[in-house]
Length: 181
Image (cartoon, rainbow, N blue to C red):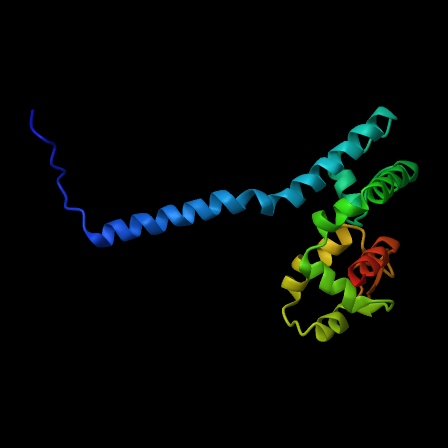
């Protein structure tokens, strides 16, 4: 029986490329789960709230619960919307330690510390944080903080108002206090 001879010659360049690819795959495999954990926890928390409230005859869907927690307007009974807010606050108070690891990224923490006891417009916040790209600021700083309930709009009825300001919620104040200790 003869030894198989592949139709190509392995070079050191090929071996180096294979090693680099293997290393990158290993990094993705090891680090991929930790980046998704906060989103998974938040998603599970939202589904838990919706399911618990559904048992109590609350008719809001998971999408509507998500929208309520993001501060968006939702078509539903005011009582049911308030139940969602109350349930989320109860869970947030119960697991304040989890919220630090779940939803306070370094970027959100920087936003909370910059905001402090004041109410500021987006442009003022961005200037104080030395940021210039509004879309990135909204997606990486503002939306996560709003979704986590750490900041709120001073005029929630008109979210697109150019003079809209943002301030810390009780939860946000608690997180700032905790980070300064």
